[in-house]
Structures are given as C-alpha cells and as structure tokens.
Image (cartoon, rainbow, N blue to C red; front, top):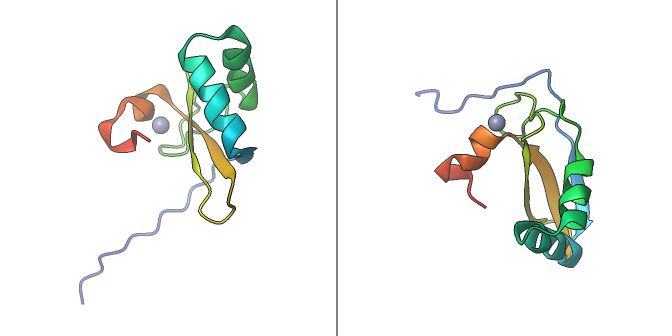
Length: 94
Ligand SMILES: [Zn+2]
C-alpha cells in the first residue's frame, strides 16, 4: 500500500482566535473599505512574529489574516494569521 498521507509537525504554534461571526465579517468588510479603526483592530490581533497558518514563516508587518466560519461553533469565526505570500496564493483565497 502506497503511503499517501504525510503528517508534518512543526515547532510553530499557530494561534487561532474565535470572533463573533457577524463582528468578524463586519470588521473585515470595513477594513477592506479602508476604515482606519477596523484596520487597526485587525492588525492588533497578531504580532509580526506570529507564524503563518500555512507556511509557519513569521507573518511580518505586512501579514494578513484569514477567517472562516467555525464548523464546530455556530455563529463564530476562526481567525488566524497568514503571511502576504500565502494570502496571495490562489489556493488559499477564502
Ligand atoms: Zn505563509
């Protein structure tokens, strides 16, 4: 049997936050429109040293966030840090 599954464990510990889904959508839409308060809130969620959810590299000052509805907690969004490179990759568009 061919080994089709590879499990990768890294030393990086990714932080995932839970936000109220409505608030999360509202604040990300406002940030996309250039609302300074919303942008400041989102950039305060993770430090520049936070490892990217996908590649474990520090997200840096230009890092972005990824959020998606929590399938296990209705009404909540999971929010994680993502580096700009992974954020721009087509496969990760949320
Ligand atoms: Zn990345």
